[in-house]
Amino acid sequence: MMEEVSRKIKVPEGAIEVDTFPVHKYHIDTNAHVNNSKYIEVACEALTEEFEVQKLRVEYKKAAVLGDTIVLKRAIEKARIVAELCDEEGGTYAIVEFIGE
Image (cartoon, rainbow, N blue to C red; front, side, top):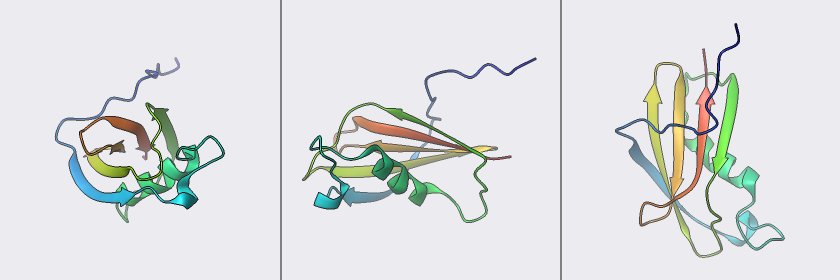
């Protein structure tokens, strides 16, 4: 029987702020917002050294643009780490779920 996976990534309660990142020119793509791969690079900062990523899921919510600040929040559960990339008011740019063993 195949495990059913929800399309939406649930962010666990109690996520903590890990870091903040200003959006620079090199984050921007030809559409004048942060390139999707850059969200994943920033989210990798939420990983712990011992966590081994087996699978990755990303949910994009809104585009960050030059001059914005990305606030990185992290929640750790048994077999996953969820990184939420937010604006300074708490709105979500993207959610990245790292799934381990």
